[in-house]
Image 1 (cartoon, rainbow, N blue to C red):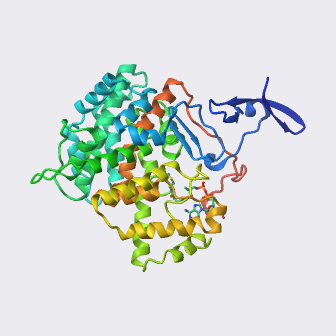
Image 2: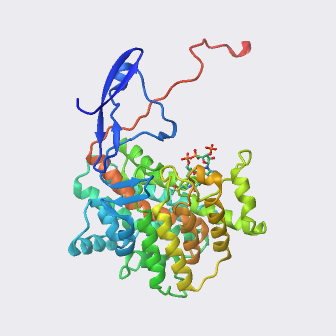
Image 3: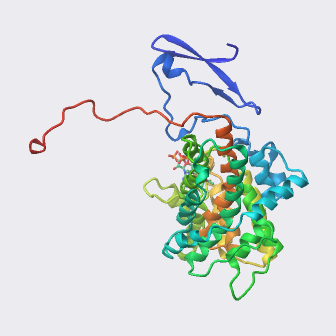
Length: 428
Ligand code: ACO
């Protein structure tokens, strides 16, 4: 064994191979630890656990680097569009012009959803959060395409499920919004590109067409690209874990949507705007809220700050901040929330509490501000994140299947009672 790690337990030495990634990240392969020594590793929150080998996304949290299939996020955000990035993530290479046309054409052909799905939508009260609707409706695709439940689907069948999901999610997402405001849904217009079509379904009325604004379309493309994958985060790990039980693509992604909904994950973009609104309503004193965030007896956290892996800066936040400035200028919007956001950022970046803990603004700190400027309602922010993250979830699910990964099943250290005898109810 060349490079290896040695673990000494109860005086006995065990050797484990070192695994090195293409960007020189290192891991100790401890798969044999338990069978050889009886020990497991304990790592609550998987803070230091590699769950898979993956060739999709590279991220260096210390350097603030993010690559999709080797391409820097800055280049993709500037030069590409969302459908092209989706192809790149799912199939591993930038498409040729013909491949992109085919992929995009197939997605357009599948944007309609079965009319019976409208009956499911109608069953939700208007108070339903669009993320709950999205998760349920994506899971219900299994009812309309039961062949997707077969874990031995051919490559062509899997590709069809992928296309259907990419196509229908934006229709379902826009319909979940229309349901929440009690308006009739809009059907897709397939002459439009992916992002314009989504905007049309969100904002057109039976009485009025939606005028496509290229500034808005460009911003949506950028936001979706920036959210498209982020390696083994909470929702993606959920997708891989659920999928590892041979669950269908639709069920696995539905579970990922539920994970993303949490305010510590994708739900943070909604929470950021709600926090900024709260600060504004309270008189706009950002210092007071910085103090609250630092107070360990106060549950308040600065939403949009901190990240499990970025301990330098979040490269997506930098791109989004610039895009937010451009969008607000182009649309002539002067949002007082932005002033509070900038004050908060400035104050936090100069405060030892945040500096010592390496708490920087993350992608969600500025995305909510752009979504708001684009007219996207607050409770749709996390749905926008889900639209963006979909190609990443698909790529990770597909890779997990192609690598024939075993069912995910962590272990535990039991801390409960040791064996004891049942006590009859009258004697307790
Ligand atoms: N405000 C105040 N203090 C914070 C914050 C925050 N936003 N984030 C972390 N801290 C503090 C913690 O209290 C802890 O302090 P301590 O060492 O004195 O106990 C320290 O910083 C480390 O924080 P952890 O919670 O241990 O870090 P973890 O990696 O587990 O959590 C997380 C990361 C969940 C993102 C956290 O920073 C957070 O809650 N941020 C706010 C929510 C948010 O913006 N989520 C979006 C993340 S990006 C995404 O999912 C797309």
